[in-house]
Image 1 (tube, rainbow, N blue to C red):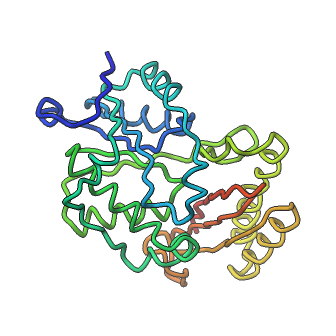
Image 2: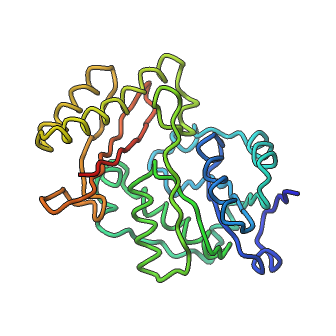
Image 3: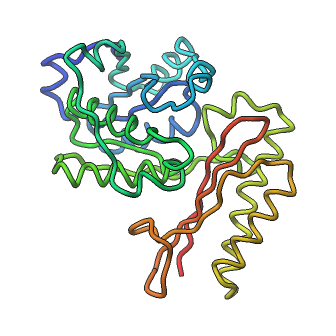
Length: 272
């Protein structure tokens, strides 16, 4: 039986919790993370909290999909143990919550395009960790830079939480599922699938022996041909988010682009 809660009490704190934080507008990608959480055989707690601190654009915050009734139905059907629906005043009480400044990786890519975004993300995740006190937490790989910084925060602060990574969930055309996809028309969703196809093309070129620079340039050209407004397409070493060198073993392609003025992000791993 799923319990809907607005605060964390001693009964919950006495349980071993696997925590799946969300901002709502639940989709199959979120549900796949819950499946991973259930595999731990711990109590599953899913939070829905739209965190205004991580939006550097007020319109983006206001336009974020709000489907709470449907979200609760999805989560109850999935059989989660707790649905946590905190008020903003509970997450950010008047006495204040410490802001968590990201490491230098937080200033590139998404951090450069969305100043303050990762500070908002880490601040709310740290606060939620402090409230829920989970032993495990599940995050999706689609937000790759966010995941890197959350793992870095857990290490920096010596938090006793195991971070479990969930694979990117895609539709049949390859588009990574996102709550923001709800703002896309059917034609735009088809067009947005070209983002992933471009990443695949870059990966293929690298595996064929082309240089990183040439391969990424080709990917940029491909995306730009499809009426997609590219923010960035970059390649990094997965271990540290630096530009790869001859010792790099695992690479990650990361991109952000706009389709119908909707910001979409995606990434793809490349093993050398």
